[in-house]
Image (cartoon, rainbow, N blue to C red; front, side, top):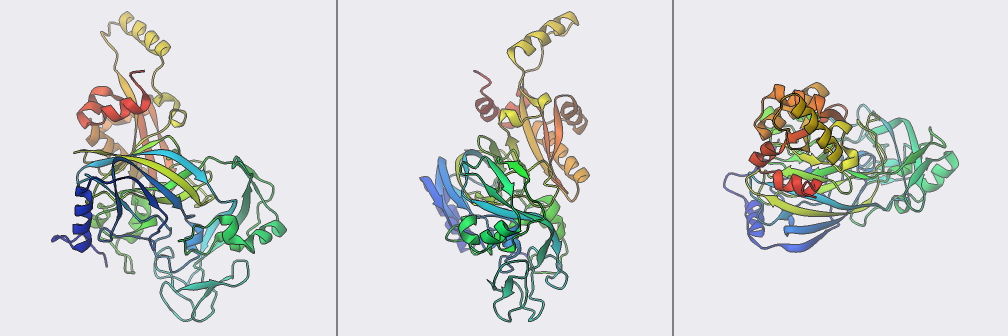
Length: 454
């Protein structure tokens, strides 16, 4: 069953509306987490003022919550923060000012779902295989993949194990990580919460407890980003399912968090796993409940496009965000302004030399003027990558008042289709005409972010 926003505005909604009418605080500090559910009727923190900051200590995502059946959404994300003045039909620009990894190590790998330990979806509806309790409380006894036990009956109760996994430790400056052998992985597992730097409010079983060690001596660079960053959807969602791919699993599901196809459209696509949602980037998010309700979490130490293993190196960390309300920008899903080095080569702003060469070519072939453009990346999500690409193309066309064929052409010759997460998150990135960005109400933000006037 779902919990839609009440038409008559319940107590929580009324409280949020009052908060949003307030001027808001300059800084809201967050170290509280949801139980895995994003509920528009739950009370938000804040509000933070328009232009103010959110400073959060985030808990690791994915694997720790995945082996903690009492967490009902697949992650521990922060309690949402209301933004003063943000109303349904607006958007909120979130500038990522800082991201710092605090974990000293983590573990990850390909997952295997354990049959008989969930109803339809192991991320949200775990059950104890012996006593049948739904979302049972658990305790950790020892280390290894059978260490997570039902607190009531003592059964091995994790709904996931690994097919191939690793434990990875980071250097002191968090520049690189190296995967560990069995003895070292088990040493970290015995003090897992410490090495994971679990925040005080986190209830997850740390994945370091499993001590996986199939990969040894592999070196990986750190480049942290947020797998979850967004606004609260207009119906109750398990947090990891707030996107078109994982969200599609909720349609007609046999558990309490089932949605209809229509309700799935009320998502905000906060769970993207896009590696360019990192320090310096700006994410523009839809507002679908009063105050917006910004939440974050699932920090990854590093990840290649696609997160093809299904999971990457989930870590705890500290994050500073700055928020700006964009009035009247009604969007279906997020828009990303990546830092310059993360843009596809073809989507980078033209240099003065390139513009001069283009103007000369234009004159030679009778073109009076060349377009003024700037980069934009529109996020599309759906059940698979083909459908996600169509979603992104449609959103970009609607936003910029273009035809879908025109967006296809522009993304082909001045941008790219990039995979955020397999199976169904993509970025449609291209150079958009400034006049189209101006019509959409985005030009001041894009121009300032990319310093087009400099």
